[in-house]
Amino acid sequence: MTEADFVPSRYPNDVDSGKTSWKSPSNIALVKYWGKREHQIPANPSISFTLDVCATTTSVSYTKLGEGASDFSFDFRFGGRPKDEFKPKIRTFFARVEKYLPFLRQYHLLIESSNSFPHSSGIASSASSMSALALCLMDLEKQLDPSIDDGFFIKKASFLARLGSGSACRSVQGPIVEWGDHDEMAHSSNLYGVPFSGEVHSVFKNYQDTVLLVDKGEKQVSSTVGHGLMKDHPFALRRFEQAHHNLGRLKSIFAEGDLDGFMAVVESEALTLHAMMMTSMPYFILMRPNTLEIVNRIWDFRRATGLNVCFTLDAGANVHVLYPEHEKAQIERFIKDELAVFCQNGQYIQDSVGLGAQRL
Ligand code: DP6
Image 1: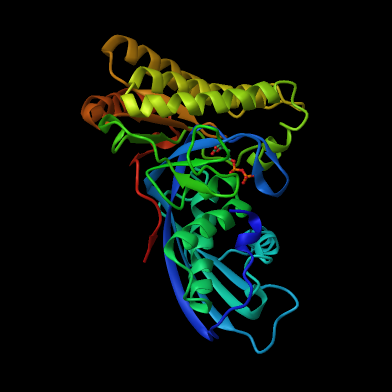
Image 2: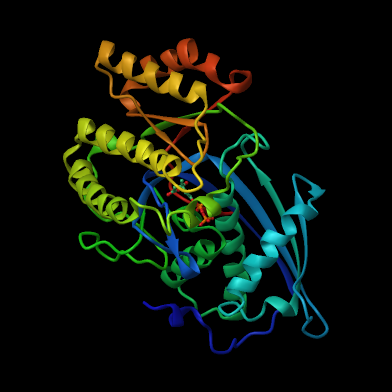
């Protein structure tokens, strides 16, 4: 498919008003997207586990305007209250996707959102929120053109979500989603995420992710700025090749149930992501002392017990602790007894791999 396939011609139906709601999860990248080209095209392919508990619920109530407005007409409420500070981001998103959703200026939209995870927990909510919003907009488009089939609906939702926030395109489906052209990945695309279609050993089913909330403050450097710094980064090309290579390795790791291989790729990806940040110009560090303390404790515990626990990091100080379901009891005890103390207010979120967004 090409980008032109997402530009509709004309809508057969007229729709006055309605309401739609979706719940969309967050995701955690195993091979990281870091660096992009114009129009949110990733500099390298990435792959993630879709999460289950960490999610955004969004509803969009739409009412047709008398005549098309000159600007986008919408209100945004978060957790039941108006949140005008989020509106510029949504307006930018609308401007990017208008070409693909030409009805946008013909409606007034009331967008109401809430997150399942604590507000300002430092968890990236752009993936779940942009994917939930994209899915709601696709519901409206399907009202206007009922001939849209499920396959196209999902692809276009992921395509639109990507234009809001790159990683959001991996939140529409589950349990493992790949985004970005890759020679060994069937149906892979730079335009949208696709469910990983290779074989997956049962040990990776229902994989656990405990999200340790190390620092709940605002990030000093946003992901968007970080991506931009990969443009003139001295190690960028080698890094992009490495991501391709790691994705290829994960394919056989998933098939064989190779937990040692999995932990090596995933931890290396996390540290490489942060190494890219530390070697950008300007350089920056998002890890906190407690992030490193947790990493070291995980390594010590793994050495001492032989259990298959590893970590990954997103673009912040929080740590995602990953482990197979059959080791859950011992590892949860370790987290509670030894790692929780390094979290802000002792807070962490018990999550696991999920199946993707749901219409409510
Ligand atoms: C480190 O998707 O948040 O989480 O496209 O600018 O919105 P924008 O960036 P974003 O970047 C995510 C970066 C990451 C790695 C990943 O999720 O692959």
